[in-house]
Length: 307
Image (cartoon, rainbow, N blue to C red; front, side, top):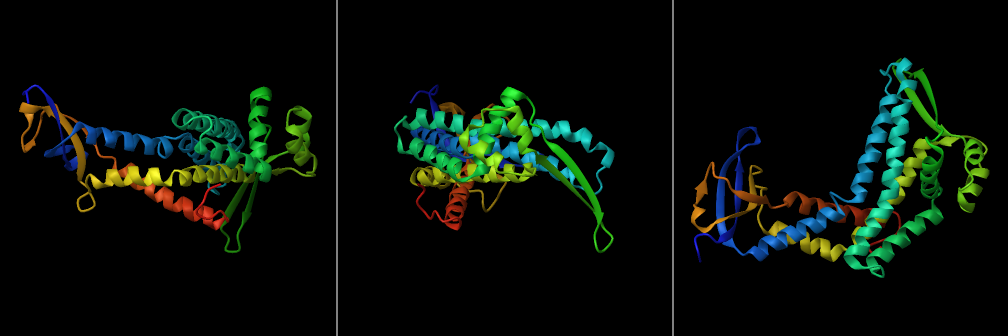
């Protein structure tokens, strides 16, 4: 082998104070195909879990919930509540955009990876169709996204109620509501099912409740998709975890190194070295999500098989 040829090693990065690299342990020489398998395994898990359209939706949902919780804080200045309605409107718009993207982008990813007639894509589409047929919140969110695109901001009403608890403590409830009559009067493309839903209502309804329930529908659809790929997820995650561990020492993280043949030594500091961390975090997250997802489906009556 020429001294100029690139070789791969699987070793460890040792982290010191202030999370800076303290030392490099180059470990053992491995093949490029092993490093490539790690890269492909980590990418497939990130695409399904940590960097998926579902993850983007989760972030938008959590951000919106945090804003709503802030307005229910009894220490919140009442005079600023209605000034925060703009932030809520933007939060709802962001959630609805991510809600639509969850369907569109996940479908495109599955089509590209598995094909238009693949069981994975068909299962995902059936899961969303089931939620549309059985959940008012999900189908309403689908149509409300269209409303926001054509009519502008969603017409919420915000109401604040403050009261003292039995122990004299201050309490505060912020309620975000929607008026079905107003929605029907401002938009005519609700579709037969959602129009009938809204026409059956006689009072305003909670916007936060419908957002929570729509998010639950997306969680169920995502979990069904994850369960359908159980074998591939377990294979990818277990391969990554087989490459090393940091359980005994969290400061010692496995990594792939690539250098010219003449640059290798047992340990080295200060060299310009390319390395890729072994994504133990992604693998662990994937297995935990798989286990938690199976438990979730079982709790709502779907069991192990996602259909």
